[in-house]
Image (cartoon, rainbow, N blue to C red; front, side, top):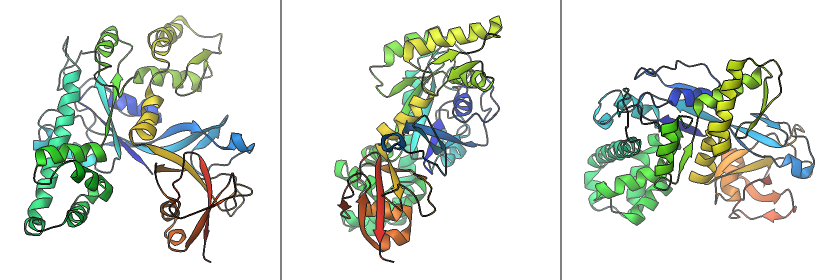
Length: 386
């Protein structure tokens, strides 16, 4: 299952974001380093399901489908806060960095109000862009340290190694960081392994891209800071984790009708004044200004835009859109754009890849060659030797 890491300084709202996305109760406090051991939970990407197009009622094995919207499960990590010098072990740095090794993409939760400093302590007028810059720098330096250690083990081999050799050596040494051969090869096309100051940041950006959650957007100073910085950081999404939690709790009590990533409608006539005031603030200060609380947008953007992943549905019977047990569209895989049919077969099961014959496009019923590149919302049957 795809993993996403929530990162940021202490007291930025990481645990609130985690709870907003997973609705798992975790300790939330303005005290720095409230999170020490990482929180792990399931969140969901929400995308249009193909069941509506085919006029079918799907039966997901994992997640759910509501009104033609497929909820695809992913793993979300909420880890300890990061402070400047973390790559050298300051704060809970080493532990923090180890906790996000398996993440394919990172969401940096930034307190855009400017009411906490770089260590999460209360202040006023702090520039949130400093947090964005120092965290990226810490990750780049961490990558540089890891690559240096890998190179020291194979210093003699690297001296006469070909590019293919370097890719193989580094991919083996960095496999625990979810760094692929493709990432390394792309980085080598832009820089030399002998120039780690340049190579390391490139490889980090390719293998651990970062999207910014401009959190606490319901605060006035956050509005001002976001307006000032949004052009500089075009992948910054305004978020209100507290607002999302409030809306989901209200929906659970049938006080409002709410769909993640959208607005809401009050459905109860029994709201007290305090509840009305909270909902009115979320509506006027967040939803009407930015379209939503931003939590779902962050998750979807991280995967579908930043990672450039697509959703593909494998079936055993392309005529009826079912698996071998007759379940309609039970599975959906998140894969990188450009994945071939045969590569997809290996992702489903090694046997399918090894005995691959061809793919069958469920829409056109055409045979698909091994190197045919899949598109978002493709439905594919894999033919293989029995």
